[in-house]
Length: 523
Image (cartoon, rainbow, N blue to C red; front, side, top):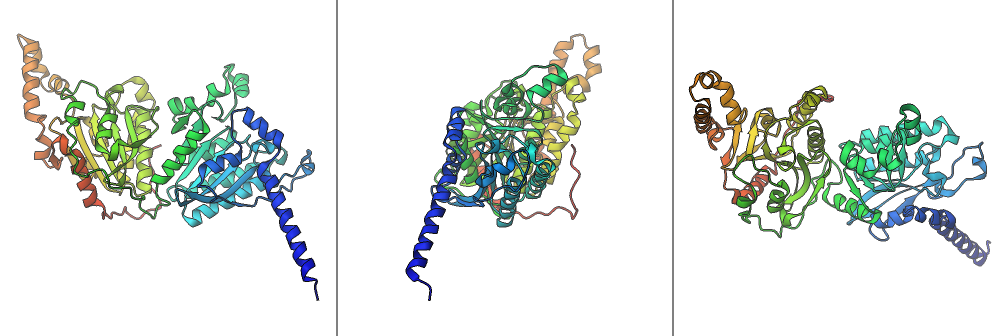
């Protein structure tokens, strides 16, 4: 007969030993922790505590160690192998995550490290729940050679497989160099923190050796560079706490996967609330700029919205907001920036946002005040035709409810591209200030009546008269509505109520694209 008391004592000892081991793993090396804090960075555990609801994170494979030998690795086999993986709750909903621990091997990726990430990514896809990566790593673990590179390949393949299936969010909280930078680029949203996070394919030393250019890490791939110039980062913050707070906010808005509708919000802002302020915000004169953000604030629930790529390609606004408690994706011209024209970058920005919303069942509302595409040699040589077609393709491919509202100008190809009825918008409204035409009245008159103006005794007076006649005949606010290209011309003060009513009507929309493996969108 076994000694029951002795067996129980042994079990208690083992449990205490396990607790001590886990406590040591969680606290980490005090000197490494001090060094991490000295750089102005939080530790991996502190970040996880900020991301997840208190006490909900369930860690997997915390006892995992690498099996590599040589180059001194056999003498250093820390638990976790430099990455923490698991799941927990964010606002009560399941979210999976992996987070690099810079205190261990500088967060560098080796074989065991990669296998842990592969496992949690597979679990997230299978469970149909969002995946967040907290990136703070030095790239591939050189001592492990090609196995580390193969580990990245497995991550990229899973990023691609999860694309459009579950939301993927990359949070850059440290360096991310070389091939490692491609994983964030494959995800839906990239968050960065100023001064402490950088992304680049080749670092400053290599750049200087190859090109002779001298640049700092932040100057090459810091948060401001990627949120303003390259468009790689969607959000930039001054500290990790505010960054992770907005990650939680974004997760609260999004559906868990592509089979679900976005979570509903409180309907405590009257759906029939009048928006009389719009009569003053938007000038009747189409040449006068205004801030489209003020229009958005007036229309959406409580004036709250989350703008995506706020500082990049600013002639178009992309944002997530609620209308009548329902999440919508807003694409809006911004007359305050380049008069609201579409260019290479704004077309790409809006196209990817439209694709994201369509993938995750988020209705689209497009606010149009666009004078056309940006002219110029640089734009043409840079491929504005190809890039502009991306936005056209994205809208035409979208099957979610689509509502467009034309506030003022809607000229030429840009009118078509900004979700016009002709490319499949379900409902199209316009304000009495709308001007829908091939081009502005003066430019049109100069083309159509070129001969009359040239032979006139008073060309300026003739031009002015012909512009007036062209406007009255072909650009009056009811011209498009008379031809069925706009469903209704509405009072701006009724914009919110009208759009919400249309969203309610379209809530049961079901549309399928023709059977195909996949399309071939313009690149």
